[in-house]
Image (tube, rainbow, N blue to C red; front, side, top):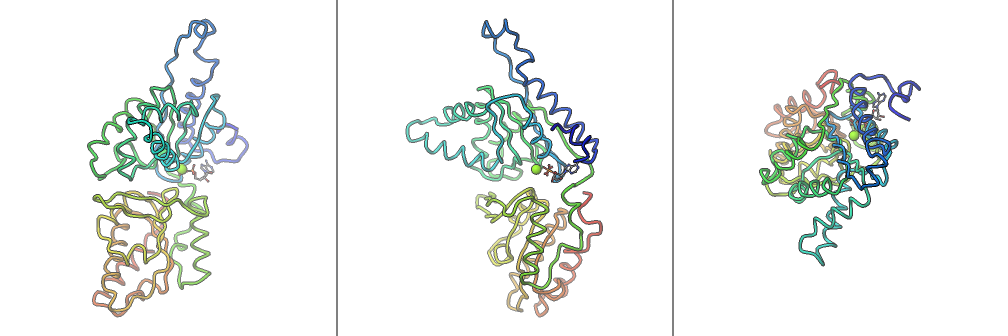
Amino acid sequence: MSYRQEIAAGHLKPDAAQEAVAARFEALASRLSPANGASALGLLFGARREPPRGLYVHGEVGRGKTLLMDLFFAEAPVSPKKRIHFHAFMQEVHARLHAARQSNADALAPVARAIAATARLLCLDEMQVTDIADAMIIGRLFEALLAAGTVIVTTSNLAPDDLYKDGLNRQLFLPFIALIKNRFEVVSLDGGTDYRLGRVKSHETFHVPLGPGADAAVQDLWRRLTDTARGEPLEIDVLGRKLHVPQAAHGCARFSFAELCEKPLGPPDYLALAHNFRTVFVERIPALKASQRNEAKRFVLLIDTLYDARVRLVASSARQPEGIYPAGDHRFEFGRTVSVRSQGRSGDGVQR
Ligand SMILES: Nc1ncnc2c1ncn2[C@@H]1O[C@H](COP(=O)(O)OP(=O)(O)O)[C@@H](O)[C@H]1O
Ligand SMILES: [Mg+2]
């Protein structure tokens, strides 16, 4: 069904911002249609049609980017076509490159041709470049795919200029941003409604005490915010190191307290999280002993950084925020920061 039909059938709520983007998708679908442009005569003489420009759709999470792309993909009159999550796609690219390098010094061109042969239309969901290995090849990869006639459509939570922000060797990535701006139609989808957050109430985000009840509640929130049971692992380059995100999906990242605050992470790591995600899950926050000064410090820093960036926190905790670090040096500051910032935002997140 098309977007219009979904609205007419009452499956979706009318949304003016989505409608405008749906029209762009429709225009692309009609340009892809074989009935359009290539006349029989043209085909006879082998006239090559310029493939239409692809779309780069960006906007906050939950606005309907994936929904619109999937509706378009289902109907797009092209074959072969391929729809894949951006990270899964890049994994496939690296695997193909690895295999091709056994026999070929410049593996990228043949790999791009092989991919183009499987997809005249390539829809990539949730483009987000966090890894230097991806950042360094993606420009040439896209260039080669476009040259082979593949039409690319991508969704992203980030505007092109914000991709791979603060990434290592970012100047080598800038040509890719230029390519997106020159060769794609860049479309912003920013209606005020986050359809996914509407399923989550602000008082649901801090779960005390630890146990099966909190685990189930956090899992339920994760599912509502991401539409998946489990996210994908992700590496973020931070000043040349890797920050490992155990699970990432739909703008959410999920960690245990131990993974975030018992390891020697610092401000750049938490900033990278705040840049890359809209919601961070921190599970199993223990009651901290007085001696756990470093863990407490990191936790306050994490909460502060997320708060400043207006990133939502979902947590399960042994204690209410004021009780997490009752005995330590900085306990007053700790209790105030954590309690105000972990649950204090009214009307949390629905509007950004
Ligand atoms: N107009 C709408 N009416 C009802 N539900 C919607 C509408 N737009 C999106 N949704 C739902 O909201 C959720 C978030 O949409 P999604 O396309 O995943 O957002 P995004 O990709 O921008 O993060 C999905 O479950 C989607 O089906
Ligand atoms: Mg999406």
